[in-house]
Image (cartoon, rainbow, N blue to C red; front, side, top):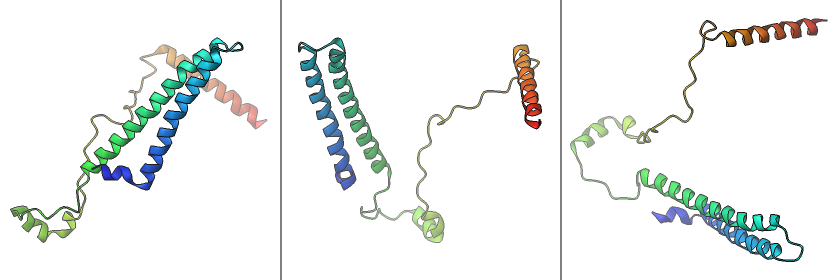
Length: 149
């Protein structure tokens, strides 16, 4: 289960996110000290309060990516496991090997990635839209006549 988080790619990501979180802590302390020096300002104090937020976001993103990776590996079929006991469906799979080779479909999303397009509005329904479209048509016509000269 956690073995997928120990690949070279993930080890590099672990180091990167850990370095980002530690660096944000050091930068926050540095800005805090700078704010309390003689030449410090409220801007340094603001940065001192922002750097921990950046570090917390890095940790949040790190945990989110790990959870996504673990759920992706959990939903994929395990090929290393032992064969399950034979059932009546196995006879059908032996007769149709092409269909058995297809991977299981991924679960569908609850909502689409992109919202559906807005329904079209007729010029009769919205007189302002009709006037604006007529104005745009006039501008386009004038622009085309100017280009022909």
